[in-house]
Image: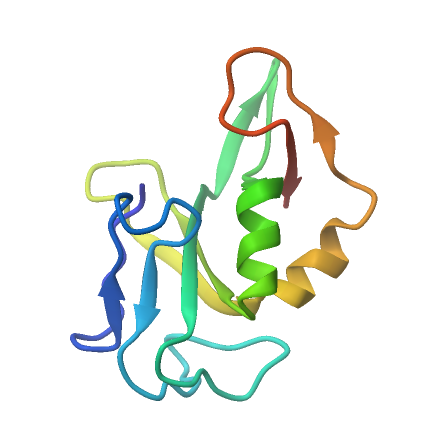
Length: 135
């Protein structure tokens, strides 16, 4: 998991014993800023559930590299969507300290539109049966 420092007191950590489908909740009203832009919404009310997703700036793809991808699990996404939650999307450089180069808050409803028709089945012993990747 990517370590995210937004501003002290904005997000409260939610451990996996409480919920496996989101990582945090807002502890106060949150508004966009130049360091944390919002897409598709103007503010986050106190208590909004947040799933934190990270991806590298680039990742290997055979003999070449490609843009990183956010890996979204269908079941967790559906729960976040029903709870009117949001994603905190973080792009980082894969080196010591994982420096962040971009981050944004995006409502689950907007992510749902972006992923429509992109879900695929996963074989094996995965916690989810369907996933999607978002570039």
